[in-house]
Image (cartoon, rainbow, N blue to C red):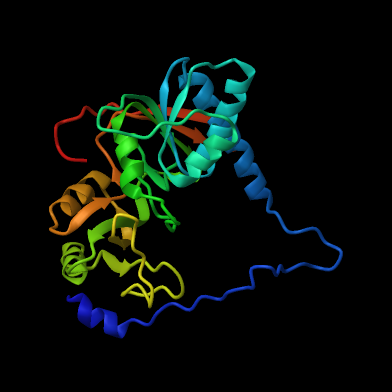
Length: 290
Protein backbone atom coordinates (compact mmCIF):
# COMPACT_ATOMS: atom_id res chain seq x y z
CA UNK A 1 0.00 0.00 0.00
CA UNK A 2 1.53 3.32 -1.06
CA UNK A 3 1.72 6.00 1.57
CA UNK A 4 0.78 8.65 -0.95
CA UNK A 5 -2.69 7.15 -1.24
CA UNK A 6 -3.09 6.29 2.43
CA UNK A 7 -1.93 9.76 3.49
CA UNK A 8 -4.65 11.42 1.49
CA UNK A 9 -7.34 9.36 3.22
CA UNK A 10 -6.19 9.91 6.81
CA UNK A 11 -7.12 13.12 8.57
CA UNK A 12 -4.68 14.91 10.85
CA UNK A 13 -5.24 14.50 14.55
CA UNK A 14 -6.73 17.51 16.30
CA UNK A 15 -4.81 18.79 19.29
CA UNK A 16 -6.54 20.73 22.04
CA UNK A 17 -4.24 23.38 23.43
CA UNK A 18 -4.39 25.42 26.59
CA UNK A 19 -2.72 28.78 26.96
CA UNK A 20 0.70 28.10 28.45
CA UNK A 21 -0.06 30.40 31.38
CA UNK A 22 -3.46 28.90 32.18
CA UNK A 23 -4.23 26.05 34.55
CA UNK A 24 -7.40 24.22 35.43
CA UNK A 25 -8.16 24.32 39.16
CA UNK A 26 -11.02 23.36 41.36
CA UNK A 27 -12.06 26.08 43.82
CA UNK A 28 -9.86 26.18 46.93
CA UNK A 29 -7.90 23.17 45.69
CA UNK A 30 -4.20 22.58 45.22
CA UNK A 31 -2.97 21.71 41.71
CA UNK A 32 -3.78 18.09 41.01
CA UNK A 33 -0.84 15.71 41.37
CA UNK A 34 -1.67 12.04 41.01
CA UNK A 35 -0.58 9.54 43.63
CA UNK A 36 0.75 7.36 40.84
CA UNK A 37 3.05 10.14 39.64
CA UNK A 38 4.44 10.74 43.13
CA UNK A 39 4.92 7.03 43.67
CA UNK A 40 6.68 6.66 40.33
CA UNK A 41 9.05 9.52 41.17
CA UNK A 42 9.84 7.87 44.50
CA UNK A 43 10.63 4.45 43.07
CA UNK A 44 12.59 5.95 40.18
CA UNK A 45 14.70 7.88 42.68
CA UNK A 46 15.53 4.64 44.47
CA UNK A 47 16.45 3.03 41.15
CA UNK A 48 18.61 6.04 40.25
CA UNK A 49 20.43 5.90 43.59
CA UNK A 50 20.99 2.16 43.22
CA UNK A 51 22.47 2.69 39.76
CA UNK A 52 24.97 5.27 41.00
CA UNK A 53 25.85 3.43 44.23
CA UNK A 54 26.25 0.05 42.54
CA UNK A 55 28.00 0.84 39.29
CA UNK A 56 29.82 4.18 39.53
CA UNK A 57 33.44 4.08 40.70
CA UNK A 58 36.07 6.74 41.25
CA UNK A 59 37.80 7.94 38.08
CA UNK A 60 35.13 6.74 35.68
CA UNK A 61 34.04 8.36 32.45
CA UNK A 62 30.24 8.11 32.48
CA UNK A 63 27.68 8.47 29.73
CA UNK A 64 24.95 10.62 31.25
CA UNK A 65 21.58 9.50 29.99
CA UNK A 66 18.45 11.35 28.95
CA UNK A 67 15.04 11.24 30.58
CA UNK A 68 13.32 11.45 33.92
CA UNK A 69 15.17 8.63 35.72
CA UNK A 70 18.52 9.64 34.26
CA UNK A 71 17.96 13.20 35.50
CA UNK A 72 17.46 11.85 39.03
CA UNK A 73 20.64 9.79 38.71
CA UNK A 74 22.60 12.83 37.49
CA UNK A 75 21.37 14.90 40.44
CA UNK A 76 22.30 12.18 42.92
CA UNK A 77 25.70 11.67 41.28
CA UNK A 78 26.35 15.40 41.64
CA UNK A 79 25.53 15.26 45.36
CA UNK A 80 27.86 12.30 45.84
CA UNK A 81 30.60 14.12 43.95
CA UNK A 82 30.23 17.29 46.04
CA UNK A 83 30.31 15.30 49.28
CA UNK A 84 33.53 13.58 48.26
CA UNK A 85 32.04 10.09 48.29
CA UNK A 86 32.78 9.82 44.57
CA UNK A 87 35.84 11.45 42.99
CA UNK A 88 37.37 12.23 39.62
CA UNK A 89 34.24 11.66 37.54
CA UNK A 90 33.88 12.94 33.98
CA UNK A 91 30.49 12.90 32.29
CA UNK A 92 29.73 12.61 28.59
CA UNK A 93 26.14 13.78 28.05
CA UNK A 94 23.79 12.04 25.65
CA UNK A 95 21.69 15.16 25.12
CA UNK A 96 21.46 18.90 25.68
CA UNK A 97 19.16 18.20 28.64
CA UNK A 98 21.57 15.85 30.39
CA UNK A 99 24.45 18.27 29.79
CA UNK A 100 22.45 21.10 31.36
CA UNK A 101 21.45 18.97 34.36
CA UNK A 102 25.03 17.83 34.91
CA UNK A 103 26.39 21.37 34.71
CA UNK A 104 23.90 22.50 37.36
CA UNK A 105 25.13 19.90 39.86
CA UNK A 106 28.83 20.38 39.13
CA UNK A 107 29.71 17.25 37.15
CA UNK A 108 32.75 17.91 34.89
CA UNK A 109 31.83 17.32 31.25
CA UNK A 110 33.58 16.26 28.08
CA UNK A 111 32.37 15.65 24.54
CA UNK A 112 32.26 12.28 22.88
CA UNK A 113 34.92 11.55 20.29
CA UNK A 114 36.01 8.50 18.32
CA UNK A 115 38.78 7.84 20.85
CA UNK A 116 36.58 8.36 23.90
CA UNK A 117 36.58 5.54 26.46
CA UNK A 118 33.30 5.38 28.36
CA UNK A 119 33.33 3.07 31.37
CA UNK A 120 29.62 3.22 32.18
CA UNK A 121 26.47 4.74 30.74
CA UNK A 122 22.97 4.91 32.17
CA UNK A 123 19.81 5.90 30.35
CA UNK A 124 16.03 5.81 30.37
CA UNK A 125 14.15 3.58 27.94
CA UNK A 126 10.64 4.11 26.63
CA UNK A 127 10.16 0.35 26.79
CA UNK A 128 12.49 -2.58 27.33
CA UNK A 129 12.00 -6.15 26.18
CA UNK A 130 12.04 -8.90 28.80
CA UNK A 131 14.91 -11.40 28.65
CA UNK A 132 16.81 -9.73 25.79
CA UNK A 133 16.74 -6.21 27.32
CA UNK A 134 16.45 -4.77 23.83
CA UNK A 135 15.16 -1.22 24.32
CA UNK A 136 13.37 1.56 22.49
CA UNK A 137 14.49 5.17 23.00
CA UNK A 138 13.53 8.44 21.31
CA UNK A 139 9.74 8.35 21.43
CA UNK A 140 9.60 11.75 23.08
CA UNK A 141 9.61 14.87 20.91
CA UNK A 142 13.15 16.04 20.22
CA UNK A 143 13.75 19.60 21.29
CA UNK A 144 16.46 22.03 20.21
CA UNK A 145 19.76 20.27 19.76
CA UNK A 146 18.67 16.85 21.02
CA UNK A 147 20.00 14.00 18.91
CA UNK A 148 19.00 10.34 18.83
CA UNK A 149 22.26 9.66 17.00
CA UNK A 150 24.32 11.21 19.81
CA UNK A 151 22.36 9.41 22.51
CA UNK A 152 22.65 6.01 20.88
CA UNK A 153 26.32 6.46 19.99
CA UNK A 154 27.29 7.19 23.61
CA UNK A 155 25.24 4.29 24.96
CA UNK A 156 26.70 1.78 22.49
CA UNK A 157 30.25 2.93 23.23
CA UNK A 158 29.99 2.29 26.98
CA UNK A 159 31.80 -0.60 28.61
CA UNK A 160 28.71 -1.18 30.74
CA UNK A 161 25.17 -0.02 29.96
CA UNK A 162 22.38 0.34 32.53
CA UNK A 163 18.76 1.14 31.74
CA UNK A 164 16.62 2.65 34.51
CA UNK A 165 12.94 1.88 33.96
CA UNK A 166 9.64 1.35 35.75
CA UNK A 167 7.87 -1.98 35.94
CA UNK A 168 5.34 -0.99 33.30
CA UNK A 169 8.15 -0.22 30.84
CA UNK A 170 9.55 -3.76 31.20
CA UNK A 171 7.40 -5.71 28.75
CA UNK A 172 7.17 -9.26 27.48
CA UNK A 173 5.83 -8.12 24.12
CA UNK A 174 6.74 -4.51 23.37
CA UNK A 175 4.01 -2.26 22.02
CA UNK A 176 3.85 1.29 20.68
CA UNK A 177 6.11 3.10 18.24
CA UNK A 178 9.71 3.08 17.08
CA UNK A 179 11.30 6.34 15.90
CA UNK A 180 13.31 6.12 12.69
CA UNK A 181 15.67 8.81 11.42
CA UNK A 182 15.69 9.09 7.63
CA UNK A 183 17.33 11.28 5.03
CA UNK A 184 15.08 14.23 4.20
CA UNK A 185 15.71 13.95 0.46
CA UNK A 186 13.25 11.47 -1.06
CA UNK A 187 11.88 10.83 2.42
CA UNK A 188 8.52 9.67 1.06
CA UNK A 189 10.12 6.80 -0.84
CA UNK A 190 11.78 5.63 2.37
CA UNK A 191 8.52 5.96 4.29
CA UNK A 192 6.67 3.90 1.67
CA UNK A 193 9.30 1.16 1.82
CA UNK A 194 8.99 0.97 5.61
CA UNK A 195 5.21 0.96 5.29
CA UNK A 196 5.42 -2.00 2.88
CA UNK A 197 7.89 -3.73 5.20
CA UNK A 198 5.41 -3.80 8.08
CA UNK A 199 2.24 -3.85 5.99
CA UNK A 200 -0.78 -4.48 8.20
CA UNK A 201 1.24 -4.35 11.42
CA UNK A 202 2.17 -0.67 11.62
CA UNK A 203 1.37 2.84 10.45
CA UNK A 204 4.13 5.22 9.37
CA UNK A 205 3.85 8.92 10.24
CA UNK A 206 6.37 11.72 9.79
CA UNK A 207 6.87 13.52 13.11
CA UNK A 208 5.90 17.23 13.30
CA UNK A 209 7.95 19.85 15.13
CA UNK A 210 4.90 21.92 16.10
CA UNK A 211 1.21 22.01 15.37
CA UNK A 212 -0.93 19.15 14.20
CA UNK A 213 0.27 15.58 13.86
CA UNK A 214 -0.41 13.85 10.58
CA UNK A 215 1.00 11.23 8.21
CA UNK A 216 2.93 13.89 6.29
CA UNK A 217 4.22 15.62 9.43
CA UNK A 218 1.84 18.54 9.31
CA UNK A 219 2.86 21.97 8.10
CA UNK A 220 6.13 21.86 10.05
CA UNK A 221 7.78 18.42 9.93
CA UNK A 222 10.54 17.88 12.46
CA UNK A 223 14.09 18.25 11.15
CA UNK A 224 16.87 17.08 13.48
CA UNK A 225 20.06 19.04 13.99
CA UNK A 226 21.74 16.65 11.54
CA UNK A 227 19.09 17.52 8.94
CA UNK A 228 17.04 14.32 9.08
CA UNK A 229 13.30 13.70 9.28
CA UNK A 230 11.82 11.44 11.96
CA UNK A 231 9.30 8.75 11.14
CA UNK A 232 7.26 7.15 13.92
CA UNK A 233 6.53 3.54 13.00
CA UNK A 234 3.42 2.93 15.10
CA UNK A 235 2.81 -0.78 15.61
CA UNK A 236 -0.81 -1.86 15.89
CA UNK A 237 0.05 -5.21 17.49
CA UNK A 238 2.77 -6.34 19.94
CA UNK A 239 6.29 -6.52 18.55
CA UNK A 240 7.57 -10.08 18.82
CA UNK A 241 11.27 -9.20 18.47
CA UNK A 242 12.82 -5.74 18.61
CA UNK A 243 16.10 -7.11 17.26
CA UNK A 244 14.38 -8.43 14.14
CA UNK A 245 12.63 -5.10 13.59
CA UNK A 246 15.99 -3.34 13.92
CA UNK A 247 17.57 -5.72 11.40
CA UNK A 248 14.78 -5.00 8.91
CA UNK A 249 15.06 -1.23 9.33
CA UNK A 250 18.82 -1.38 8.87
CA UNK A 251 18.32 -2.79 5.39
CA UNK A 252 16.11 0.08 4.17
CA UNK A 253 17.86 2.61 1.95
CA UNK A 254 17.47 6.09 3.42
CA UNK A 255 17.32 4.99 7.07
CA UNK A 256 20.05 6.75 9.04
CA UNK A 257 19.30 5.48 12.55
CA UNK A 258 16.45 4.17 14.67
CA UNK A 259 15.46 4.00 18.32
CA UNK A 260 16.13 0.30 18.92
CA UNK A 261 19.13 -0.74 21.01
CA UNK A 262 19.64 -4.51 20.90
CA UNK A 263 22.23 -7.27 21.13
CA UNK A 264 24.29 -5.34 23.67
CA UNK A 265 25.12 -6.80 27.10
CA UNK A 266 23.41 -4.56 29.62
CA UNK A 267 21.58 -4.35 32.94
CA UNK A 268 18.06 -3.14 33.69
CA UNK A 269 17.27 -1.56 37.05
CA UNK A 270 13.51 -1.94 37.22
CA UNK A 271 11.60 0.16 39.75
CA UNK A 272 8.35 -1.35 41.04
CA UNK A 273 6.10 -0.26 43.90
CA UNK A 274 7.52 -2.72 46.42
CA UNK A 275 11.10 -3.41 45.32
CA UNK A 276 13.88 -2.94 42.80
CA UNK A 277 14.44 -5.73 40.32
CA UNK A 278 17.85 -6.10 38.70
CA UNK A 279 18.03 -8.03 35.44
CA UNK A 280 21.10 -8.76 33.31
CA UNK A 281 20.90 -10.12 29.79
CA UNK A 282 23.22 -12.89 28.70
CA UNK A 283 23.32 -12.19 24.98
CA UNK A 284 26.73 -12.04 23.36
CA UNK A 285 27.56 -9.55 20.65
CA UNK A 286 27.40 -11.61 17.48
CA UNK A 287 28.88 -9.08 15.08
CA UNK A 288 25.56 -8.04 13.57
CA UNK A 289 24.62 -4.38 13.35
CA UNK A 290 22.58 -2.96 16.22
